[in-house]
Amino acid sequence: MIPFRKMHGLGNDFVVVDDRRTTLGVTPARAAAAADRHRGIGCDQFIVLEQPGEGADVFMRIYNPDGSEAEACGNATRCIASLLMAETGRDRVVVRTLRGDLPCERLADGTISADMGPPSLEWQDVPLARAMDTAHLPMELGAVSDPAACSMGNPHVTFFVGDLDGLDWQAIGPRAEHHALLPARANIGFAQVMDTDHIRLAIWERGAGPTLACGSGACATLVNAHRRGLTGRRARIDLPGGTLTLEWRLDGHVLMAGPVATAFLGQFDWDSLAA
Ligand SMILES: N[C@H](CCC[C@H](N)C(=O)O)C(=O)O
Image (tube, rainbow, N blue to C red; front, top):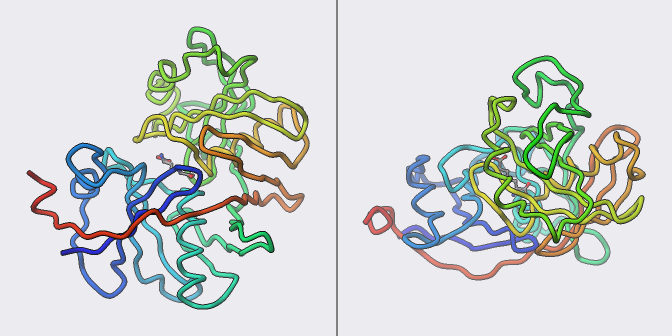
């Protein structure tokens, strides 16, 4: 049997397996089977801990429920950082991901902060299908249009909307995710700017659909809101599952802080998931 830990940040939930001293045989299909909420354990992302090599405390691999691999996941970064902090007794750890090394810190109030690195604002880096200004994409989908895009290692598109509650964003999300301008698909944010330091945000995640929160999406939203002159460099971002505190530092790095939790521990085997 394979032991796992079920964790979440603001209800963005993860199955975490530790493959640092074992070879569990994780494949995209197996990760997808474990993430299935009806036939598996169920989660927004399936997280595999691996040996990092020099310079980091752990390598974190991230699978979406459709089996695709994500380069970044802000909430899982914070969850895994808290695990490593408990393991090492330290209040600072470095989580290595496909996106790079992300330094994390336990703050005085017990929340976990992650340095998600600088965004990429070039169209090739998002990536977009052709050269354009990433602050204004020629994309119109029913009630929403003119989004901004950036990469936090993974691709994000942000629509700024007047009234989030009145918007059927779950219908627009999958159409935007698969839009022809987005060759690697993208995570799609719907942001209502309440004030220059306060945003309400709903996210349609690439490969996962609607989630209660998305950390990298919150980072991208602050970046895009500031580029559009809608907010300052710090904001509280309210997601369906709770609140994240964001700062786009002057050195370009985006910092994101919020709570993490372990819901339960369990065990499973690949064969019963495949049934
Ligand atoms: N929930 C994650 C993001 C997962 C991103 C994934 N859906 C992708 O394909 O990029 C977060 O907290 O940042």
